[in-house]
Figure 1 (tube, rainbow, N blue to C red):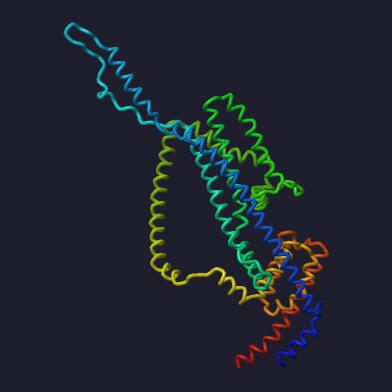
Figure 2: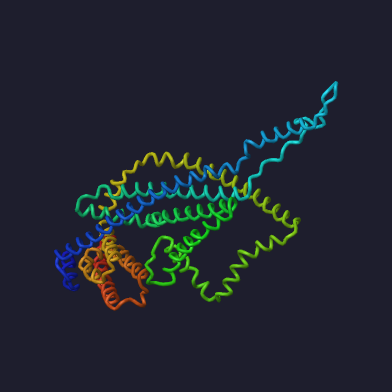
Amino acid sequence: MNQKKAYQMLQEQIDLVSTEDTRIQAWRDAANVVKVYNDELVDQWNKEIDGLLTFAGLFSAVLTAFNVLAYPLLLPLPTDQTTAILLQISAQLSSFSVNPSFVNSTRPAFDSLPPPPPFQAPRYAVWLNSLWFISIVLSLASATIGIIVKQWLKEHGSGLYAIAEEIIRRRQDRLNNLNLWHVSAIVAVLPVLLLAALILFLVGMVVFLYNTNITVATVVVVPTAALFAFLAGTTLLPILFSSCCYHSPQARAASYVWKWTRPIVLPIPLWSLVISLGLVFVGPIFAYMTLSPQRKAAIKACFRALRDRYASFRSALTQMAERLAQWWSRWMAPTMSLRKWEWRGEESVRTTENPATFDGDMLSEAYTITLNSWDLERTKPFMYDLTRAPEVAARYMLKIEKTLKERWDLTSLPDDIRHRYTDLVAYIAKRSAWFVRLATPERGADTT
């Protein structure tokens, strides 16, 4: 059986649902959906990062002014030494005894006095500067990561101006890489960093005012607590109510945490959970407060020993990192310098060598975007090309199955989606089986 006759039999055995024009139209529709989605996604990320950069700049400027006022609290006052000298001079002058032949002072000289005790910053000053400096670091980190992501997005959108098939596949390749390297998660972290910086700043401000004026601190605590309650409520309400529209990166992160801890937490009664959390967090504090000074000193000595062990461990890790860096520069750097990658050239090679892979990814991406069951039916004509490579068809179906699992449970799919999904699976399996049967004699002939 020659190849041409085999393909003719395949066309007769498998019902063709449309002509070549219909397949091309289905491919173009899917490409248009992915293009619109890609452009809107990049534009949305750029606008969001622009707003975050503006807020981060203003917030960092305000926070810097507060840090300028806070960090001198960690330093000894320059007037302390001058004041001590003046007090000593005053004491010596007041101790003079005047006689006709001499003037005597009963106060010893300043040099003979013991040195003053070392300066120790107040505890609240240490906490205040820690909170505010961590806050400004988080704010600057958010701005820095945002600038880097904007550079990625600029490179992502460059060179995609035509409508040719190669450009469409190249766009799909870049979209696959955005998902592979979790760029969406990095973008979602940016507002969380700014919120964390804002919370730390407000907590530090309350600490500062509490040690300055209790009345002002009480007045400021009320709106601060209201803001914290609002943030906590808008983060947790989407977990409790599926109809709640307060969707945000922090709410999504909380939902993921709840998803993994729910099987453990739900069987536990609420009162038992509250008591357990209280014992875990509050119990050690009260237990430490009731210890004798000797026990507290022993605990501090234990922590100092652990700190020394950690310092030695960190030194060992540093030495290991230096050795790895030397090994890298000795063996890998010459090899990498010989291969000067041209990114767009590599994209062209990938999309040209495996066009069916990116076509299948584009079709599955189009369904993931629209979630329209009719798209499963419309892409069926295009399966004739995909099923020539069974691994491409399997990749396509795995992505469709992953989308269905994320949106619904496979055991509770809507009727129209279940019907089209099972029909598509049978259709792909039938076509793939035919191509495998056609390829088997050829492999046998090649080996002989």
